[in-house]
Image (cartoon, rainbow, N blue to C red; front, side, top):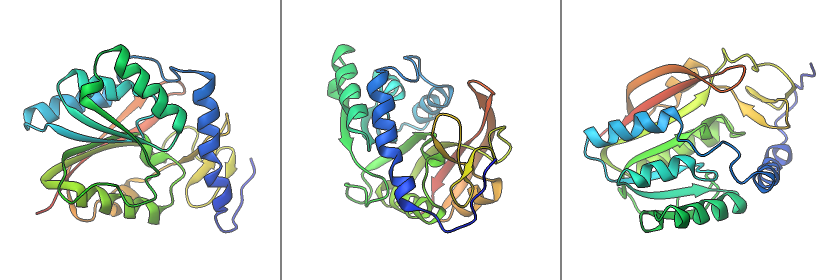
Length: 226
């Protein structure tokens, strides 16, 4: 195991965009077609609260986007990979859900391209464990809060520091590790999750497992403070 204690190399983190483009190009359904368990829980929660207009961040190729749209939500789906957005658009046409989905290519390290108070809720599955620094995550959460309506929900998932791949591979700064397959993962501790909740009330934090190993994640539900 190689550990690097020097400052974060932003060029290495930035190169992950190309890595994801390559992975999506090799497999048009990289994560399968079935919706994830977090989006199924999110849909139930959004329905119970009468949410309608949803912002999805890190939508990838759209497996969760489709589930949101087919359950009656208007979805603005953002991802920074052109191939992911192209695949998402094609899938939405195939499933006749394109009228409910607006795909947008966007890097979440930049200001979100929406007006204040645009959305009822925000959803993201494993975006928060991408190679984003804590400061970038704090800025993103502030941006999400800005575009949410009063009382809006922000539901996200992240791999955490009890995950079996934490501290394996190459250290890339903070709690980011380049694991098998060349993916850089930011593993968030419970303390970091609490830190990132500034401006929100924590409605729920649930631990769950997914996929091989298995991956260990938090499902975090935040509510925008008035």
